[in-house]
Each structure stands twice: as structure tokens, then as C-alpha cells.
Length: 617
Image (cartoon, helix red, strand yellow):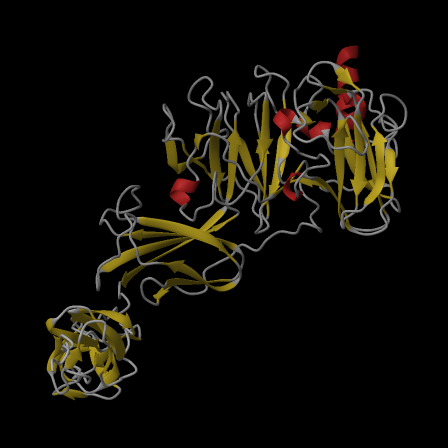
């Protein structure tokens, strides 16, 4: 009887205390659940922690104080006394410490009982705390470092486990605790052995203001991280793939996670949203918009049913995508491609199913080897319900899936021993969903493409241009300077060339809008070079100059027989040297910018110089 009375007294004391720390991670002194730093060089709550890995303490008023302390620290088994802490303000300034964590006196928690009782400031049965007095409001954070108060070791593998800790915010005016102020987005937890069960509970505050509690119900992880988000293991925009469990470490953090129900004033309830209008498909490929109008933040998920089978089937033409939305009208972009990456054909009817989810939460757990009992998840506020739990472990050998939702008290136990070893096992839920379905029609953007030759050598030549014909679309051809014979509103037109460069445009229109394609049509007549210069060269080694009319946009190329080109082989004037007696020639090829060419040759007779002999008297 005496033993019963003592136990009851302790339980009553704990239930009336408002400690935040070991009390929530270890419901009883015989349970296993500890924060840790440097496990496998991870940086949770260390001097090197990224913003999502920090351990924050929220301060609402400067009348509040942070009371905190730490128990024995180990490397997993052996006690250590080489960990320092410091506190930073919301701007990142160090405002307390660095201070070595003590193993006696102020700030030391000698037992689980004292940690669960909280600081002596509000409970005489608790521990004597360190006390920090903030001078401003916001999110302070506490950081730890092993080995030094100032020097940070990179890739520190010296794991340190905090067997007991407590961080409690107390209003100094009323001497009351303010639970729901300690949070992180990525907790690092150990049970010190794969055989030990973790029975702690976390409270997730989604970005749309929903609080759900997660009772880990005896999971056996040895060490794992607790992080939640709206998409799953990754965030590619494809919900069906993103939320699939997979081999390897695929966790990322997005939501604040507390050890108690978050302070209801500082972290208020979100609004249970609704769709204000039916969803609408506007625009055209590749710039469709699925327009949704909502009155509150949430997550919109779309299934475009293109394979004719109700629901979404992975690996088919069906498409699934989604994103977070805010209150108001949001365009969810879609490129018009189906689930196989092909552009959908024009003017087909298809079904779009939309789900507007409130409190969508994914819990990807990495490297929790065993879990026989399953998660216990409850919606705390604004709705008090038991949400359905979903999972898709089908990518892992021996894994299954549940897309209809588990409604049992505990859901998603691992199907076999070591199923979670070196794998990320994801579970997701939401507390409310609004559905809408529309039947719509694909109207691809017009994509005119002019075909036909664009270079001509004859003024007044007749030619045709065309663009692909799409039923129901209209066409209008426009030429800047040339003539279009007959109708200019068909897909094929007859065109008469004129000198120079013309801009030819076709405008194709449908209900989406008007889109154009333009080409440049050039017409430069065949050139008529005339070579001028001597036709007789007196003896070899004679140097002559030949020219042709100079047109600046044209090019010239000279060649010669019975001689060599000395200068100007690619201009309208050339200098040559005759080297061989006989009938030779000088020839020029003149080319216009659009490739029209003419060759002109001038024959040249190379004669020997007369020889004068002596006169005999």
C-alpha cells in the first residue's frame, strides 16, 4: 500500500508541473528517449546547426524568463563533462554563455523525477535552474558544443546524449509556466539501443495552423530524426512519388515540432478552408493554369485522369501534382503533358479531380529499424478528430500501401524485422479535405510553323507558303512588302517575290488567343558581273589588274588559268601575274546574300615578247 501511495503522489506532482523536455520524451523514468548531438556528425542544436536544426525557445513578453537545466551527459554509455552551451537572441547574438554544463549545483538535474517536476521556481520538488532573462521577444535558441566553449570541430563524431533536460518558460509576473514554447523543425532523438522502445509524443504545428500529436508508441529506432512537411520524402511536385517510402535518407523539415501543444496564443488555430468557386482550367499548353480560389491556406492536389480509369494509376497517362496555397486565387501551373511526358491531344475531354487538404502532414522516419505497434496520431486543434493515416511502402521489398486510410488506434507498423534499416518510411495524414471535380477540354496553344523556301534569285517569282491546318483555328497572313495572291486567311498562300528582304508572318488563333510565326524571305536577283581588263598579256611575269562591278552585299571569288592571283582574290578588284605563254583566262564568281551566283570569264592571250636580232651590213 505504501508503494502505491508514493507512486500516486509522484504522478500527481508531475501532472501539475509544466516541465518541457525529458518529461515528454520519456513518459516514465523507465522509458528511453533522449536528445543527442554529433551522432554521425549531425549538427542538431550545435554551434553549427542550420536554422531548421536549432532548438528554439519562444518568448512572448519580456516579463518571461527561461528556466533550464541538464542532467548527466554521456557518449551513449559513459558519462562526459565536456559539453558547453550558449543562448542566442532572435538576431543571432550570444546573450548567455558559453558555459560548461555542470554535473552538480545550479543547472544540474540529478534525476528524471526532478526533470519531470520542472524548475524549483514553480515546483519545490524540481531542480535548481539556470535562469535567463530576455530583453526582447521572439525565438531565442540554445546551442551546444562538445570540447570547447568557442572552438567548433568540423564533422564532430563525438556523440553526446542528454539523459535529462528541461527548458521551461515562466512568466515572472504570475510565476506560471508557459508550455508549448520549446520547438525545433528537426529533432535528433536516441533510445540508446535498437532494442529499446521510444514512447515519446511530439506536437506538430503545420504551416496552415493545424496541431496534431504523434505518439511514437514504442518504435525501436536506436537513433532517428523527427521532421515533418507537406510532401513526404522529397518535394518534386509529384505527390504520388514524393510520399513513397524509399531506401536511403530522404527527410526534410518544414513544420515546427513541439513537446507540448504549442502556445495557443502565439501559435493560433488555422482556419478550416473551403473552395470559393469550382476549379477552372485556363490558358493553353505549355502554360495551363488550374485556378483555385480558397479562403484559407492549405494544400491543393490535382489528379488529371487521362487513361479512362477512375482514380490515379502510377505509370500511366494519369497525372498528379500539387502545391501549397494561400487564401485567394492561386494558379497551379501545368505544362499540358500527361503522366508519360507526352503533350495531350487537342480538343479531348478529361476529368480533373481536386483535393483541398487542411493540415496535410508527412512524417518521413529514417533508419528506425523496427516498429511493431504503429503510430498513434490525433488532431488536437482546431479539429479534435482521429485522422486517417496513409502510407506507400510499395517501392521497398515486402512493403505495402494504404491509400484508403487507416482508422485504427495505431497505424502503420513495419511489416518485418529491420524493415526501416537505412530506409525512410513515410506516413501522412490530414484533418479535413474538400473535393471538386470538373470535366474540361484540352485546347492546346496554336503553334504555327511556316514551311516553304525563303531564298529566291528571281524577282516576280511565284511560290507557296503554308502552316499546319488545325480544325477550328483561323489564320491571317501578313507580308511587309510583297504580294499575297488570293486569300490570306487559309493555311496555304501564294506569294510573289520582290527585291530585298521581306517579313512574312502567319497569325493562328483559337479561343485561347493568337500566336504567330515569322520568317524572313529574301530575293536578290542573279548577279551580272562584267570583267574588265586587258585581253592580251605581253610575255610572262606581266602583272595586270581586273575588276568587276562592286555591289557591297555580294561576295567575289577569282580564279585564273596561265597565271596566279597576287592580290584581291575575294574582292571586286584583283591583281594577277601571268606565268605561262598561251590562251588563259581570268574568272570571277559573284554571289548574292541569299546564295544566287553567276560566273563570268574573260579570256586572255599571253604572248611571248618579240626578240630583236642584230642588223648585218
